[in-house]
Amino acid sequence: MSGTMRLKRSRLPEMAEIFADCSKVTMSENDGKDAVDRFKYACGKNWRALQTLAQETKAVIERMQAPSPAFGEFQSERDAILREFAVKDDDGKPVTYVDRGVERYKIAPERMEDLAGSIKELGERYDSAVKEQQAKDKAAEAYADDEIDVPLFTVPWACVPDKVPGTFRQEIAAMFTDPPAWMEKVESHVIGTVGARNPIDPR
Picture 1: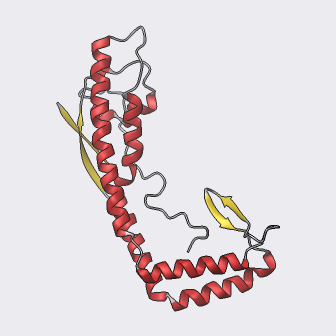
Picture 2: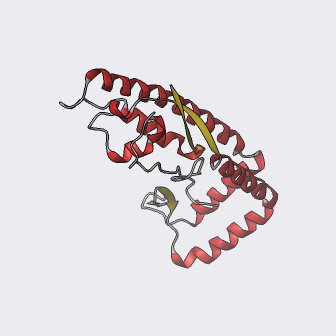
Picture 3: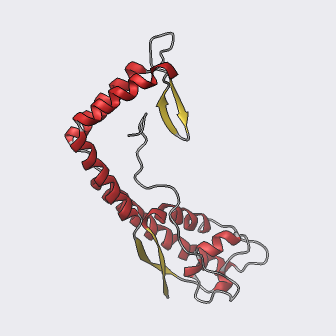
C-alpha cells in the first residue's frame, strides 16, 4: 500500500535523513523480525524517494540562483575591498573569524565607516546585477517553500520497532496505515534555509 506525505521542499533532506535512520534501527526483544524487516524495507524505499527529490530540488535551486557574470564581478570586487580593509596578521594576511557558521573578515572599528562607503559605492555601480541576484534568490526561496506530495511505502503501526523514537514516529506518521488515535500528525515546516550562500561577508 502507499500513502502520501505533504511537506515543503526545504524539508526533503531532513526527512530523508529521518527515514535513513529508521531504516537502520535494530530489533529489541519485544519486536518480531518479519515486522521489523518490513518496516526497515519501507523506510529504505521512502529514504531513496526523498533523497532523489532532495537532490533534484537542490539542482533546480542552484540553477535558479546561478549568478550572472556581472554579479560575479561584483562579488570579486567586494571581496577585494573587504580584504583591503581587514585586519592583517603578522604575515600580512587578512584575519577572519566564524560567526554562526559564516566566515567573515575582521574589520577594525575605526575602519568600518570607510568600508561602508566603499561597499555602498560598489553596490551603486552594480545596482542592476545585485537586484537581479536578489530576485533570483527570492524566487529560489519561494520554490523551496513550496509544499509537495511525496508518495510513501506504508506499513501497519504494529511493524514499528520499539527503538524508533517518538519524535521520529510523529515525523513519519504518513507511512502508517493505521496510526493510533493519540498520534497527532505534525505539519511540516521549513527548518534552516535551502540554497543559502555562505560568503565571507553577506550582501
